[in-house]
Image 1 (cartoon, rainbow, N blue to C red):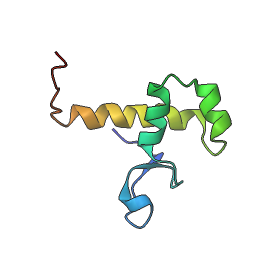
Image 2 (cartoon, helix red, strand yellow):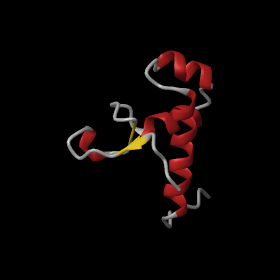
Image 3 (cartoon, rainbow, N blue to C red):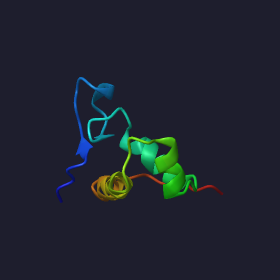
Image 4 (tube, rainbow, N blue to C red):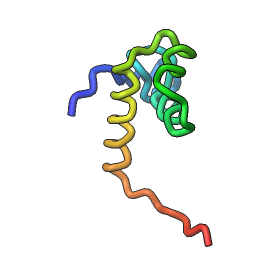
Length: 76
């Protein structure tokens, strides 16, 4: 899968995956979506982002968790 909008630059933001070389981490975008923020609100609050950036951030996150085994803690 080729995600052209996700960049990883060691000299920028400590090398965390960001959107198009901007200082907006993928994790920030995914967290905003997960918190229930609408696409319209995200784009309003982050005017450098584009609709496709949000979609690719979610695709990147989905692929990242697919590649790892994440331990789940039983909340009981």
